[in-house]
Amino acid sequence: MPQLIVLPHVELCPDGAVIDAKSGASICDTLLENDIEIEHACEKSCACTTCHVIVREGYPSLPEATEIEEDLLDKAWGLEPTSRLSCQAVVGDTDLVIEIPKYTINMVKEGH
Image 1 (cartoon, helix red, strand yellow):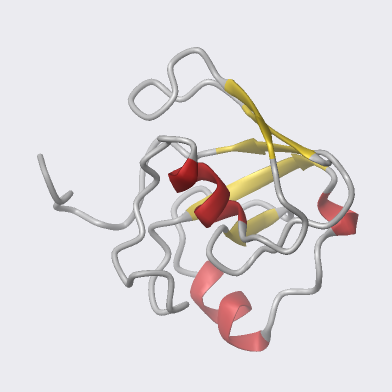
Image 2: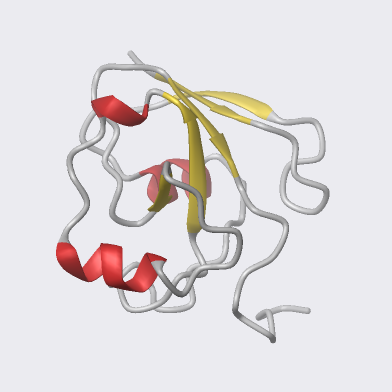
């Protein structure tokens, strides 16, 4: 079973986390199922960038991003070459190290 290693994020995961991930599940679903409340304003429909993550290790193991995802990523805060929308990036058989950026383009967070 691959692991999803989440680097510390001040609000969402202050101590970081190591999560057993299911192959075939999205990074976003894996985070949410493990009480890491990553934003997902479009309800995981690939229509925003609030679930943007940076894949620090294991990026080549992910399926290629679609053209729609690539277009949306161009609008993400802190875009890097290994950026993905966590709602679209599906875990394979390789461990992944991810960083959740400090900011999103979502100016108002639900529940805050």
